[in-house]
Length: 283
Picture 1: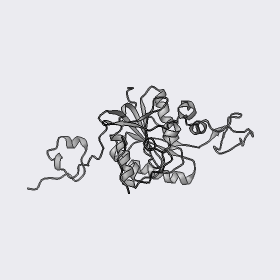
Picture 2 (picture 1 turned 180 degrees about the horizontal axis):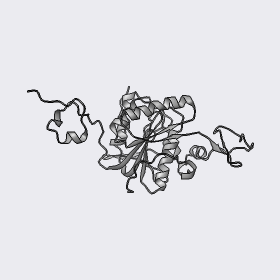
Picture 3 (picture 1 turned 30 degrees about the horizontal axis):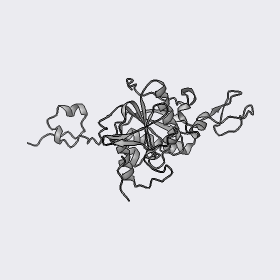
């Protein structure tokens, strides 16, 4: 007599007590990469957009800074392999060090642990000319080979698009949720919806949406005016350059305060406070 097969899909709970769990065709394959043996990361939060130039890296750094000020141990995995900007934002220019156990992330002035491909290059201006599978493999190594130690939150700054890197992060890392970054333009919002739909299709919780570059408040009259305006359209006062841009250009994003730059998003479930080189192939 043929065995009955569950064609409707299994849940983790139903598989736990099933006699056929070992060879069940409907059981989903776990593609997650193992964490480094010396890492203990409680929450992994991705920052995505789908569109470039909307300020994902600034939002990533702002979220990390906000959680650091709340007393959590924080790290940033810079998954934008071909366009890394996190090290410069934090004023980090030295190379990361490693041992047989793994690679050690660099420490920012506020204690944030950071790993980026720019921290492995002898020349930080050198282009990374790799094909997609190699880039995806490096992102996985940043999870498996880097000694993150004890982290409450690891923020993953992802490149634009819905290609190899976001797919690798969603499948290979235990992502607890994502924050989506957009800007007011209709074209940008249309493309950002692709990233939103990708997260939903892959069952990744969307924790919040940040609309960056929305407006600035006039220091004289308090009215909200266009972010790109040089003068207030209500009172004519000259508008100062937004503080986050200044500190990022100076490579000192740790000076951005929670009030000045931390985005308002739906918070992830709070975790309890705690405290040589990438393999590539020539193409």
